[in-house]
Image 1 (cartoon, rainbow, N blue to C red):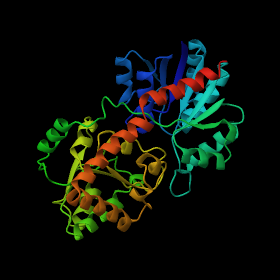
Image 2 (image 1 turned 180 degrees about the vertical axis):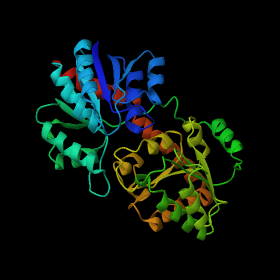
Image 3 (image 1 turned 90 degrees about the horizontal axis):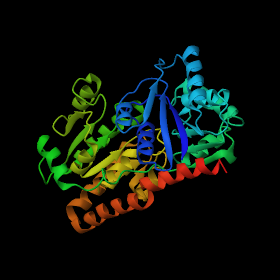
Image 4 (image 1 turned 30 degrees about the horizontal axis):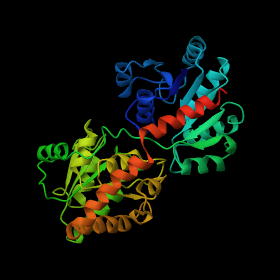
Length: 378
């Protein structure tokens, strides 16, 4: 069994953090330990409870510490892992260099980002990504991207193309699955009727997620006399968010939208809604929420970001970002299908589950990661 040491920027609630956790918990061909450059966040305790060692360096975001970097080198040297797998730009840079200084030859980088444009990405992020592009000639053996779009973007900015490969995210289909009772409980809790058309969006409040365009799209949906309720789930999606509350009020949508905030029962939430909408403007690589919703039998529409089209499996269910009219048309189309063609709607729900199970299973992802690591040792 090979020994893998992971280095990640932090372990708070996020796509990369979730994938790392699922990989460690389901991998059978390797032993794992995790070093977080910052703190343990959401996933640190989950990993520790499952028996995965987690060490946290306590770095401040945006302020690398030489002393803590030296500690990282010492940890890697003491652990003597067969593989160092890093996740996201800061960890790729610091973890990759630290691994090389510690004498580790087999370093694998992880890329989870698909947009590197001024005005969309932070200047510091673009700078570090371009620095990593230069270092990609020497530091990593392979660079694992979570999406085809991510691979193309990073090859274009100078990452060594021959080292880039794609391993799609995999999902725990024992957790994310159709569950009528779980969905009913959430609806009852939120006072949503069993026959109401409920739209959901699971995403933190952030310019990348473009809640403004989504809310404008919902206003257009309402103008078509389509009855619906919408629940917004995620960090800062509560009545404490004065900016969001004001926007909803300006659109006159107070009676249509429920601000739910963060929840831990996302599989139940996905079962409670009829349609999940991803309205991101940029930055997505492999949007986990689409696959998670579909695994629960919940159809999705999305802006054309990252590998959204590949996950959904139908370009007709995706539209350009920052286009409320196009997004509203997709939502209306789905609402009308659900209302007027219940047989087709049920078939669509079944096809959602089958697509995720067939294309993005946990076993496939784990086998792909382990295959990369093992092949480097031959």
